[in-house]
Amino acid sequence: MTLAVVLFTQDLRLHDNPALHAARAGADQVVPLFVTDPAVAAAGFAAPNRAAFLAGCLADLDAALRRAGGRLLVREGDTAEQTAKLAAETGAASVHVAAGVSGYARRREQRLRRALGDRLRVHEGSLTAVPPGAVHPADRDHYAVFTPYHRAWQQARRRTPLPPPRTLHTPEGLRGAPLPAATPTARSLPAPGEGAARRAWQHWHGDRYADLHDDLAADGTSHLSPYLHFGCLSANELARLAERRGGPGAEAFVRQLVWRDFHHQVLAARPAAAHADYRPRKGGWHRDAREFEAWREGRTGFPIVDAGMRQLAETGWMPNRARLLTASFLAKSLRQDWRPGAAHFLHHLVDGDLANNQLNWQWVAGTGTDTRPNRVLNPLAQADRHDPEGAYVRRWVPELAHLPGREIHRPWRSPHRPAGYPDPLIAPDATGHRLRASRHDAPADTLF
Ligand SMILES: Cc1cc2nc3c(=O)[nH]c(=O)nc-3n(C[C@H](O)[C@H](O)[C@H](O)COP(=O)(O)OP(=O)(O)OC[C@H]3O[C@@H](n4cnc5c(N)ncnc54)[C@H](O)[C@@H]3O)c2cc1C
Image 1 (cartoon, rainbow, N blue to C red):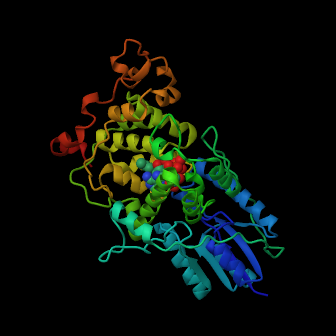
Image 2 (image 1 turned 90 degrees about the vertical axis):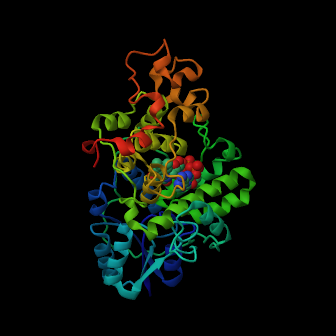
Image 3 (image 1 turned 180 degrees about the vertical axis):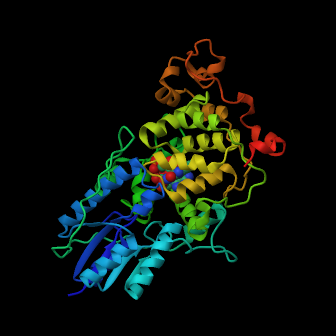
């Protein structure tokens, strides 16, 4: 009788799960394990919205495993220690885990390796469609620019998605902690788990995704990001399913999955990019706590920025276009350090993801992989282009809802402006210029 442990991390699914598949194929009994590690909370990563969504995903995973005859064992403590302890208790012949990309995941892997030796099996290609490092330029370990990465990705070999196990046998009598529970700060979260993820994909047609993905009021994107972050859906399988659907919508959607793979391969090669500038930046950042608070609270006086920040706080999610323009407002227009902005996003986002969040922030701030690092997204031009009728702002900044048409984007010019709505934090025509003007002129005491 052989036994294998599967350590679930960011792969909370039965379909297309290389670690689970290999454990099932190589052993008579399988112990599916999740470890609640206090180090994740200590690092500030277990923010309420993600903790609540994760708890739901684990309950769903446990239910799915039970339907196949197994169950999820939850343990609390240091992940490597708890896994090694369980392997010793059960006499496991092998322990399977998906390869991660963050520094934390790498250290976890090294410690598991030290404790388990060659009983540890690390499975590549579980978090992304193309494994980090599988494609790279001749002279580097990763791609630093998206377009050549996209071309290489399209030529890369991808795994045939794996079926879910039909049956599992988990031994009785193993001691486990209760499934975790948490209360979100968002007023509602998407339904958690693999079942909900697969239904969300089936119900989302995305035929007009190519035209509508940047239209803020249309809300036409898939909303699959929390499921991808926790691995309720496999990016590899999703890319296949989208390609099978075909059409311009599916093509544009797959391109976004490639962006996801792109950022993951950057972080895998440069784990420090989660905190340190990927490309060194000339000049310092402007520091102004009052401006930062106004940005965080959605009181900048720029309605399109405030709409995004309020949607984030209320729902734990924002469309990509809103993330781009709110992040650009902080990093480029206010010229503030991207790190506190990224931390604020991570505190709220139900899909908060180290690779996607930190590297998108760096892209926007000009310290990352954007080939035009001085690009500034002017919030007024963004509002006119991506919310032409003002419907998105009306939804999230209700005190301005009565302002007609595009007047809503420039309340400072409107005779109907409500008294409580703030003045613009910086001169509206300076939003695109502050970076360039201040890079050389800012007095030293405003820099750090
Ligand atoms: C400043 C900033 C911070 C971000 N933080 C996160 C984050 O913490 N977690 C996260 O998952 N995404 C993040 N993104 C990327 C993107 O905004 C979200 O993935 C997307 O808005 C999620 O909505 P959706 O699932 O409807 O996306 P869709 O448009 O339906 O796209 C499908 C999937 O492709 C991936 N994707 C789409 N756009 C990007 C992108 N620009 N970079 C990487 N992957 C992408 C996501 O997994 C997404 O679920 C961030 C973007 C910016 C500009």
